[in-house]
Length: 80
Image (cartoon, rainbow, N blue to C red; front, side, top):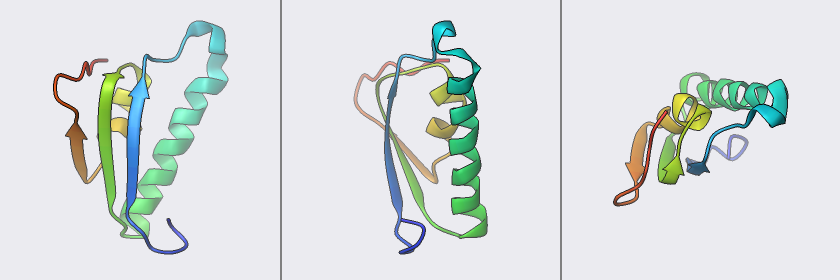
């Protein structure tokens, strides 16, 4: 999407990271958030976040809520 200057549509669904997954899983959310920041602010491209049920934990705290437009499916369970 970045190379072709296309809008990005990301469908989020997550029950949250588990302790058993370790710190590596948490670092991936930070890397995604950093890439999205560059995509939106530096490249000036459009990002739509679609939240499905459930969307909880780190996804909600990071890239799930960074969209230029944030849409949720009806009655979706969204929490942190």
